[in-house]
Image (tube, rainbow, N blue to C red; front, side, top):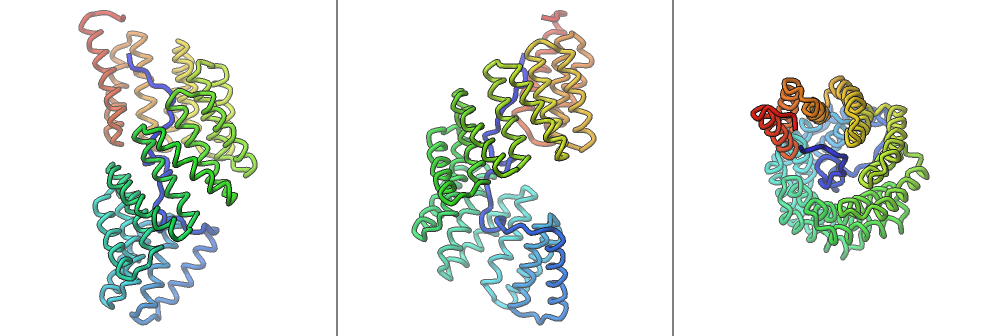
Length: 394
């Protein structure tokens, strides 16, 4: 029977390790200050003439709205900026507008359309010979290809951007590009290449004291060792990341580190340590109000109890996780809980309940497009039908 165990994702699609560099690495300022800035910009365009300056203001408004997580308004102003820039033939104003429209398509999962907009922006950058903007845009295109599951094209664009960043001596951009290339190789299980790029990234970020990115690279290197079964090395890097997180006072990083450490102990069969660390992680997530992660910790604790053949305690934690996921509308979490509860019912030979949970889990995984978990649900349903047809619980 296929069971579900804690794992560290290789893909950057869900965990945002891969970045749209030019468009999204803006400086974060408090929401109220951003809204005040938007209000000021909106007053400007009320009386602005339809000229290049107005295009620039429209692009700024689009950027500010996106940083406030108001994508529809961001998209509307980006479209207005693009339309006016095209009318005026103001190509420099077209570049950010094209990128912001591309970002909106990316967020909707329309990667082909997003790439088309960034390619148009790249062409204009090349006309002006702005090498830094060319490199940034190439990097964005590489990330989009990665999100589209086109790793060869992604790596080609990222290596082109890397060459320019290196020629310009832009170490911050070089580090982020190493990070993105490393993530693609990690997703392909090309661990030596992934490790090489993350180590380069870590070296640069340590040089400049960028603690957030240091912590991020330490985790990815830990994941590389984890996926290869090199648990002592994985633990070493996760603990280094934990130390950085504590220096920063970043509870999100601290909680994630402790959870990663729990995953290593669990993989080594040290269940008591796994339970201890998942419990510590869960307490921090409760303090900071991250209910999605609380549910994930409950799920992983349930997995440990299930691995120890303690179905009752596993069921208790799966049900708690399911309740939270249903309250917050987290479909992937709902599906994961249902599939695991279905396995417990299967172990108990309660086939009607098992079938109901596994089918619901399958349907929900289908909604979120998780083909791997869909396959596991189908496998377990097949196991159920075989048992029923043979009239056995073995």
